[in-house]
Image (cartoon, rainbow, N blue to C red; front, side, top):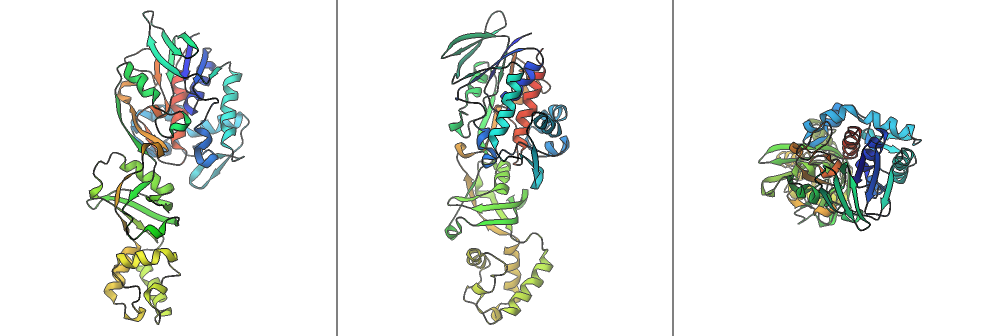
Amino acid sequence: MKKVAVIGAGASGLMAAYAAAQKGNEVTVFEKNEKAGKKIYITGKGRCNVTNDTTPEGFLENVVRNRKFLTGCAYTFPPARMMRFLEDGGLPLKVERGNRVFPASDKASDVTKCLEHYCRESGVRFRFEEGVEKVEKMQDGRFSLVTAGGESCFDCVIVCTGGVSYPATGSTGDGYRIAKDFGLKVTPLRAALCGIVCETEGLSHLQGLTLKNVRIVAERQEKELGGFFGEMLFTHFGVSGPIVLSLSSLLSDTTDFSQIRLYIDLKPALDEETLDKRLLRDFDKYKNKQMRNALDELLPKSLIQPVLAQAKIREDLPVNSLTKESRRTLLKVLKGFSLRPIGLRPMGEGIVTAGGVDVRQIDPKTMQSKNVAGLYFCGEVLDVDAFTGGFNLQIAFSTGFAAGNSIN
């Protein structure tokens, strides 16, 4: 039996603590907040998209950075096992669009309660409102942890402190400081899963407009970087919403946005030929109206003016005066409404943090530091992140289980 300290009572910390306790270890969790799972409470708009009902391969396909590093733990503790774990713990689940998994109660707090109950039943002790100020390795190979409550000694330390996004939840970068104190490299930190700031000239009146069933792509010098289908939102700074958040993760390494363009396919279900036939029908129907009044059945009213502007078509142009060439230009805009991004929203607004402890220094089977025996890192503190849909929480659970399960 070993004395194990887990720093952080978030998703990865709770899983690591439970797994380590199940191996017969004496486990203590240190949490600076007054309760466990503070970031879990705000995920999925308070509902907690706890994982994704997919295969290990499907999970890995949605990992943005360092996918190969996660391969082992993705198969050892895949989404299906996480779902069974929660349901066996008395938490009914439901699967929604995109295979997103939520508690049937729609309460994120029920997820935390389930995980904490598992821990307490396994003998895990919690020390809330007790942040870890310092971690040092002693000459006998054990670790000294210093908190406001004093000094404690442990055989192993699992760092599960999260990133630096949503600092109000306690994610203030403590794990990166601990890693650096032990000589580990931390890759540059960036916001991931955040809104994209765009030039809003001529688009300010779109604020609050939600588009459903559209496709957005990012291009760099006309080369597509990636794209997503679903729902998005125009905001005061640019664009946000599920598909924009995922797209932002592909752009988090970008330093020069001048070469980046975003294109929204407003009618992805229709190919150009079919959409052109639709336009011809609508224009025949409204041939005696002006262009500003001829697209009501195709577009939200607030979007008509910007679309016509990009197509360089006057709003007051009579429909029966529209040339074939102008109609073709309009068609192109409908299939690729252009936005000019200028950056991403601040770090504090990122749902997750990109960057972190360099995974080349971590054993992918155990999450243990290759250079410091007994020191483990899991969850968001690592340089791993994924798209929206429950995949980031699954990273936390899979890596947390790998760490705790390897200590015996």
